[in-house]
Image 1 (tube, rainbow, N blue to C red):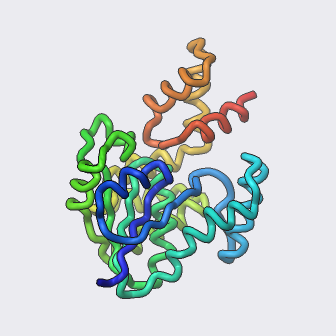
Image 2: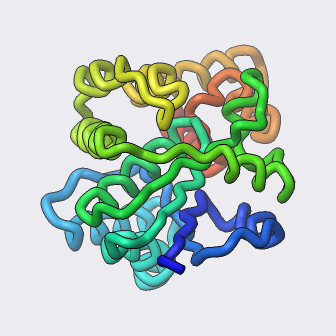
Length: 243
């Protein structure tokens, strides 16, 4: 059998994925490229920037970052042409940016790449991702996977480059592209173009309404701005900026 690789969007999905008994190696995408520096001239510079950011922002050890995060994702740069790579990513901006980056790493290899998305969710719950699903649901998602064409992969690379260069005009231009591999692309790119101001505005609105407990604030932010896919660390980071 040719090499089969599954790229999972975080450690939280690993246990449920194992229960599906779907064959293949697992690579875990542990970074949150939706925040922090991502524009660099070389891979070495990129990972050094990320490691410094993680240390400054969250106090995480830089060596641990390289070993557990950078080295893990960099495995995609060594994928052989005969491999099959399955990208398990959700719809929101957080996961979209990580997926665009993965496509940029995979692009030179020419391997077969597939998108696995939470297709069993209804439209109202679309931003909630795989967290709501069990192993049987994950199997259904895998069975409904979509293969990236060469044009789709190029689109992912172009989206990544536009995002990392903060080229919002280019992002909004690319958002007009129709592709089965990129559902909700326009909503995601619209959110990306407003990422420096809209989340801050939403949190200011929530604060103005008198909500002060973080759990309440986070739940309300997720309800109003689920398209961003921010976790508690990202929301706390914005709250710190408001102080």
